[in-house]
Picture (cartoon, rainbow, N blue to C red):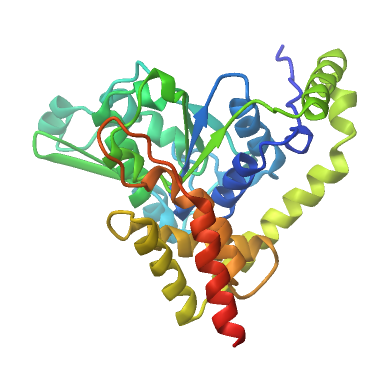
Amino acid sequence: MSIKRTVYPFCAIVGQDNMKKALILNVINPALGGVLIRGEKGTAKSTAVRALAHLLPEMNQVADCIFGCDPLDKSSMCESCLTRTKNGEALPVVAKKMQVVELPVSATEDRVVGTLDIEHAIKKGEKKFEPGILARANRNILYVDEVNLLDDHVVDVLLDAAAMGVNNIEREGVSYSHPAKFILVGTMNPEEGDLRPQLLDRFGLAVDVRAESDTEQRIEVVKRRLEYEANPAEFASQYNKQQAELAARILQAKQKLNQVKFGERILELAARISIEIGVDGHRADINMIKTALTMAAFAGRSEVVPADVLEAAALVLPHRMRRRPFEESILEFSKVEEIVKEYEERSIA
C-alpha cells in the first residue's frame, strides 16, 4: 500500500520571492537554461522545487515511452515514438504530473547520460540503450543539490543537455541521442566551494537566498511549518484557490510567450547594461531578453517594457560578473537602475 504524501503548497512559502520567480519563469520558458540557487541550508530551496512541480496540472505523455514524450509534439519525440507515429500507430497516452528527478552528488557520467551496449551492437547490429538520469528528466525538473560538489565533467554534460534539449551518447563509434528537455535546478552553499566561472555562466538565472531577517516573517515561517506538520491536508486546502490561480496564470503565460514582442531599443538597453556592468561574452544579453520576454508573458503583456529588463537583469547578471582572483563579484544593482531610468527619460523626451 502506498502512502500519499501531501506536498507543502508553493503559495505557502514565505518570502524568497526571487527564487520563486526564477523557478516559475523556467517552467514558463524552459529555454531559459535553468536556475542556480545559492545560499545556506534551511531556506526552502528543495521545498520550493517540489512544491512547484506539484502545483502544475498533469500533462499527457506516451505511456510506454521511457522518455515520456509528448504525444502531440512530433518535433520533440524520441526516434521510437516518431517512427510509430509515422507508421500510423495510435500512441497510448497517460496523464502524469511533472516529476522532480534528483541527481545525487556521487553520480557518474554513465549514470547521468545512460550507457550503450557495444557488444550487443557488434553482434546484433542494433543499438541497445540503458537510460540514465537524463532520460527520466525529460519534460521534468532535474534537481541537483550541492551542484558545486559534482564532478566538473558531469556538470558540463548536464549544462550541454539543458542547453540543447538533447542527450548525445557516443561510445566506440556508436552514437545514440534522445530528447532531454528538462528544467535544471542546481543548489549550492558557496561556503563549500564555488563552481568554475565557465560553468556558472551557463546557468540561465541565479538567485541568492538567505534566511528571513524580519522578525514577523520568521514567525510566519515557523507558524506555517508547524501548522503543516500538524495536519498537512488541512493546511494545503487553505491554499487551494491561490494554487489554482497561480497554475492557471503559468499556463496562460506559456501559451502567450510566443506572441510577446520587443523593440530595437529594448535590445539596445540590454546591450548597454551588459557593457556598463562589464560582463563577458553575449550570453548575458541573450538571457536578459529571453527572461524579459518571459516576464512580460507572466504579466499578461504582449510587449516587453524596460521594467521587465530591469527585473531580468537581477536574475541574469549576479553570477556573470567579472571578478578578480580572491575577490567576490558583487552586482551594483543601483547602476542598472540608473541605466534603465535614463533610458525611460530619453524615451519620454
